[in-house]
Image 1 (cartoon, rainbow, N blue to C red):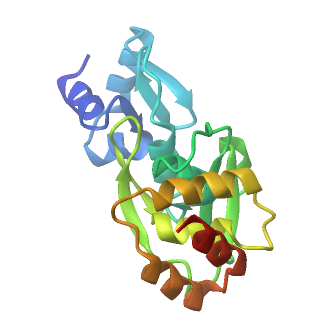
Image 2: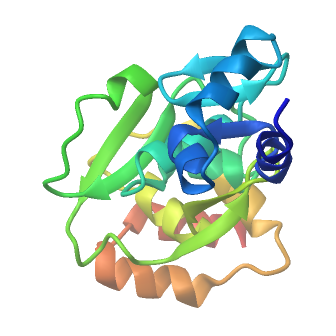
Image 3: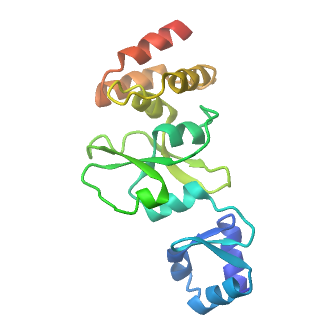
Length: 195
């Protein structure tokens, strides 16, 4: 396999997307040759992994849909606030964003105003070791306790209990986010019970 191609797979923990290959001037023939030699496999449109590797599902989805931020259930998983598995990936996009391919990549989308979209975004490592953008633990709690969502009660309580056990919890920050995003009476009541 081409040395540069191997270095790129190593850099991105075994998963590459087409734009990375173009960015680093990897020739299409090098990729085609690696696929024919069973060294590389195509796992989705424009997504490649080393043979017998599992792709970094979170990383490549965010690279393909770069306007999205992991939120809700996906954020709970990435922050280890739940034991749920990813059957689909939840991302929040700016209101007005549209991409017909979201469903093909098992992305459940939420849409928010441009003023709320950038609040409390941070980078975390995926289980495969790449970094992705995700809403903070506090923002995620405020989002999943939105009464309009009918989010699963058991999952909400489990996430809150895990958050309350953390040494670096930020109650004041949750209150600040509520002022900007919307009041969450049930969240505050549950926090008071768990204190």
